[in-house]
Amino acid sequence: MTDVLRQDIHNSEVPILCRACEARHNGICGALLPDQLIKLSKHTKKHKEPSDAVLVDGGEETNTYSNIMSGVVKLVRLMADGRQQIVGLQFAPDFLGRPFKRSSNISAEAATDVRLCSFSANVLDELVLESPELEHRLHEQSLKELDEAREWMLTLGRKTASEKVASFLYLIATNIDPEANVHDADIVFEIPLKRADMADFLGLTIETVSRQMTKLRNAGVFDLENKRTVIVRDLAILERACETEKD
Image (cartoon, rainbow, N blue to C red; front, side, top):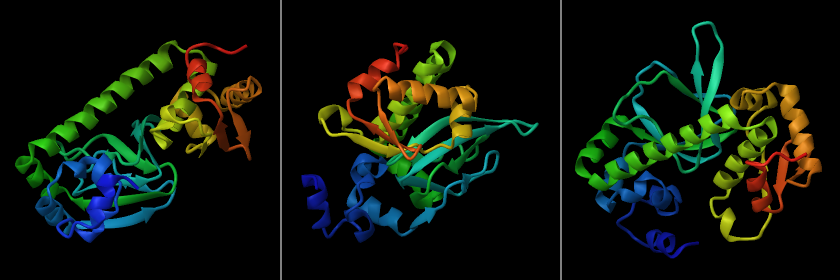
């Protein structure tokens, strides 16, 4: 447990709901003062949503925002004829919502079981006006998502099938374990997307995804258990596979 989190647990000014919450420090709420957290917590609900649950309906105005506490959320763009494209993934402690525009044509769906901390959009909008630091953090997340979208454009437009699959696994590994670069322990995670969704996200067929997964596993880039559990022994090897196709 970090020193900051330990201090929060014993800080009577911080709401009980927030004291042991990692998103309190790493998410947008870390920008709020105790009295602002108290104001927000009066309109806050923590809840679980199952895989495939629709969290935000594209095109509809939303009255709530959320912090992702655990799990993976997929952002989906649906076309008029029913075709869809997964345009992004979000992880804990990302902020789910658009504080400067209440509606979007992008839907948010639970890729895995997720835990959310949801709160009134009106209250957060008020706090944005009070707190430049909160507005700064929201802008930081927007810029992070923009950078990720540009990086993914490169992946889809220029990388080989093998590099695309490796890039997807690297994206998951580094978001599931943000400190993966500073320790030597194995990184273990469940692939959060079904093979059909994974193929959609990568612009590949399901068969190509399966072939490239086998190819990368046989090359020692990662180990695979039960078809869904990925074990990354060396993150540097996986990172190199994102830019150099393995024969």
